[in-house]
Image (tube, rainbow, N blue to C red):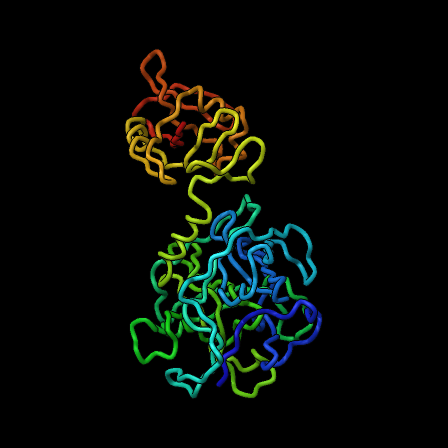
Length: 396
């Protein structure tokens, strides 16, 4: 058996046929179906290495991918798009601004190790094959899949996604395809001293449709549906193939994905450090910027926190008074005038997901009712204090 890293094809070879296992250049999901589902799954280019991979937006400007996809690159040498439609797609590529690789990831020399139930396997990287890329420009209007915080059970169905050549070797890299696989087992390296791998992996097996992850899909997600919602269960790392096979995916034994549940705390903490909660929805500009623990309105230096769910006015006041975000604890419920000013200054496009809801203010109407304001247009309304409305805290 040999292990094949899933790093994508060299950029100069994107129009060639599927290459050999030895060259490390091969295809995308074998027999996969072209899809536009989950637009947060996008196309990642490593300009330093001249390779392509897949990644998943887990918020508006942070991409989850495999550590080996970004090897040898600075953040500015990585670009990402959700609108790739071929090998030389040029539209809407966002360049990286900051990069974090899991501290326990490491490359190896390909030494043979034992896989339970199989002959020797050569691996070229070990540890937590995960990286987060902060983009210099934000994506808007997308739904971002949640992280799967519980391990997928054996036999669970997952959907795999990636960009690259298809099984014929003639389709252009940059077209997203998907397939179905099943969870075969969890390789629990940290708990097993005899394990052939040092961190938790999801081992996926093919179905009768013979769809499987292949080189070119590195960093792509395996998606598990939980309670009707898509969750990222794993990040594509490598496959095992029949030794001597000329096509990396032609006789794949299994696909291995780094377990997201095992590393969810690190992913969440790193995401928050790269893109703090309360960050502005759009790119920083002359009117708003991510600053001082939230989204700062440059016109009056008020800083707005992330949105909170609907609650009564009393609960809203208490929530803001007790909020700690971005290292600050002096948050409060805004006045009617402050919410109206936010609406006038363009808060609808700079504060994430404000929609057309009404938000509690600290101000009271003459009849004792609370005053709520709709940020989309600045309209105010008297509202019973026991009614539940959304909350947007402020400081400054």
